[in-house]
Image 1 (cartoon, one colour):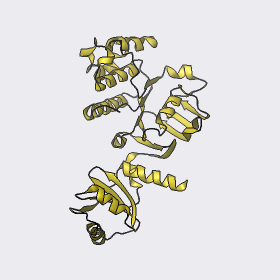
Image 2: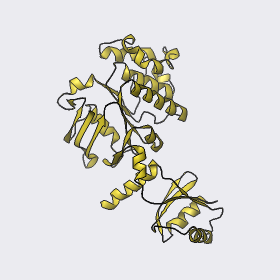
Image 3: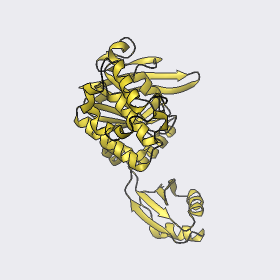
Image 4: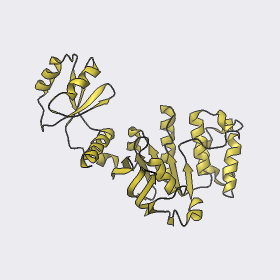
Length: 307
């Protein structure tokens, strides 16, 4: 059953198209990820889904309610965690949580079992003002406040941006536990490595969805043979490959460059000889498996070529 059904959603800000004729659905009890860079349209889409923004055209049905005409009924069923920390920084941890519970006519105790595993990590600091918490602790408090009324759908806008790697891992473990409790989750992130933690993802760029599928299925659609190459001077290597007549694409990936060739098969010896002739020493060249980021770059290039 579809928890979210979005049909031909468009949103503009003056001449800027933030969301460009987007359609998608989210099934019950899945973690659905919107993956894309800043400015891709993720936040605008999430604000439309949570009744905070009106689309210029199209419609969204969330939990059986139209986001424009039935927003009052829908808001009680949603939990929303915006990208920017938006709790009251001059209130304590406990005061924030009690306040958000009271908005929905409840108390912390009513749904404590739902947030227990999350809140227990910050409960020792319940008397501390929210503004004085670390990034990871603010994240846990915001999630607790979004859950305290036991929503059917949890919408999280870039919840792991700006927090350390350990806190990111802990947060995703929390999301898996919430899914096990029957809560459907929509989450956005600019981190490509988090795509694999979702059941399905929508890759989005410039307000358009490039593909929607399971992460592994998206990767399997990558058609080119992919090579990773490095040398003692990565910048010199990058320039040499960009000037190579057979280069199709070349992108930096950590200590390596990811390279594809215009030809169906490449001659490793010929390519190595070319690069060494350009002064690239200490070469390592080997075929590698593509990841979700490689797939995103290929889809983005294909979309640009079609335009």
